[in-house]
Amino acid sequence: MNIGLADAPAQYQGKPNGANLDDAFSAIKEAKSRRARERHLIRVFLSHKKKDFKAANQIRDVLRINSAGRIDVFMSENITKGDDWQGKIEQALYESDWFVLLFSGVDDDWSWCHHEAGIFRGMVYPDSERLVVLYPPNVELPDPLKKYQAVKCQPPQPDQPDELDLFFKEIFGKPPYPGVLPINPVFANEASDTRRDAAAKIVDAVGCLVVESIVPEHVMFVHVPDVNLLTSAEFPDGTCIWRGSGAMRLFELGDTNFSWREFQARLDPELRHQLDQSFWPAIYRACSKSLTSCRVASTHAVLRSPADGRHYMPVISRVDITGDNSATFSISFVQVAAGTQAEVRDKSVARIFTALNLAHRFRWEIIDPYRDRDRLQAFVDHRARTMDPSGAGATNGSGGLAAIWEAIRLIETESQNRGVSDEHALPADFGPSEARVRAMFPLWYEKRQQLDQAAQSGDVATFAGLLAELDPINVEFISLASQRLGELVRADASHQ
Image 1 (cartoon, rainbow, N blue to C red):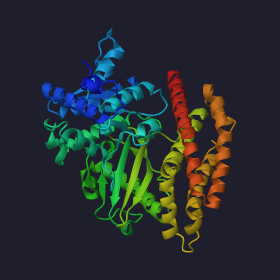
Image 2 (cartoon, rainbow, N blue to C red; image 1 turned 90 degrees about the vertical axis):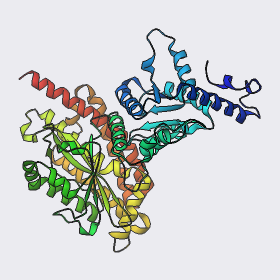
Image 3 (cartoon, rainbow, N blue to C red; image 1 turned 60 degrees about the vertical axis):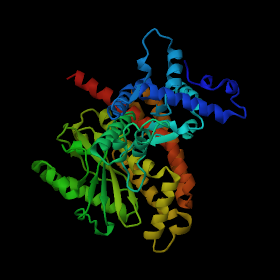
Image 4 (cartoon, rainbow, N blue to C red; image 1 turned 90 degrees about the horizontal axis):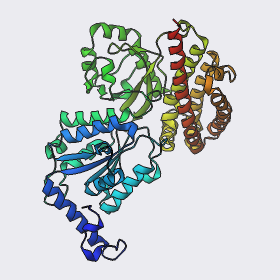
């Protein structure tokens, strides 16, 4: 039997807008509670797109393993081929106590997932906190999903609530219904490696849903306790390495938190010697420059990971400065092609490779840090307080925006110097996508002029809005360049 308004007493049925609606929902809640007590477990409906099955399956494993058999997770893959698919879905929704939607982006048709969420919300209203949306950190939720409980799946951020931790406490630590014991209060309420590992698994699973070519798989958080002690030669004592989404594995270390001294001591001695030559000095200089210049500095360094033999470019994608004068640097490791441009034989491959790296730089140095209006305003305000002795930036924001505009100009100048700004030559390298890439050039020229005007006038809102408009264009270009680069490299290899 379905659990819906049909479970309410007869006087409430067929009256969803009647005066006794609250009593009707109380009756439905009691029916659900009774069923949970009878089966000695709660049921979670995990809604997802077919392409995200691998990530959803990992989330299901995390919930099951830590519930000691008291959580049952339903996924559409549970339905036997040939069964009444829609009927089984609706039945599972009626029997579920929690609804978890794994949302990976706005590019696909999510209408059926919205439909499932709507059915479930209609049953549990007003207790709609039992409807949860898990999503990657760089995905913007559409308006229909913002009314639900949203959990951004990212590593713990300094001075920010850990949304995954709160989710675990909610589902494992609280009684699901009156008279029903919590699922696993020890797991929920005591700090433990088990819960941290569970969160890391979900972060890794959801992080993989983002297009690999535009989002780094590995992030390192470097926390400096006093920015006044940071120099271009070393990190000060007390610096910590916060666990990211797998960056430690690039150095053949476990994915955990270290003090800076512990991190250095655990590195392979030969690797440490190599990194001390140029890699770490480049990181020190970039972090120090990001503070003194009030813009995110590039590193111009490459790590060859002993774990997989691949090359990664460290990019400072975010700097958070707190009131106690400490700072946290988010360092993203973006995989790049091995070798220098001179070592790449084909000119088309060389141009696309160069353009791809510069597009990555534009994303991590400009778009991601500054497309959010509030974050951009905070940067402009900080610039006005600390870097403008004349106070010129304090009233109209032009000082801070001018610094960002100069960073854009540096990337643009590098693209000119390296021969990838030609609006005729570069699109021709893209083969089937030539027309689309060619059409991006006038779009960029238009937005570039508007960015310049906004920077000169100190218009923070317009500047952030223009970066938000450039975001999908940048994403599309990186995706097209990654795809085309792969095609050309594979074609070259097949002819050798």
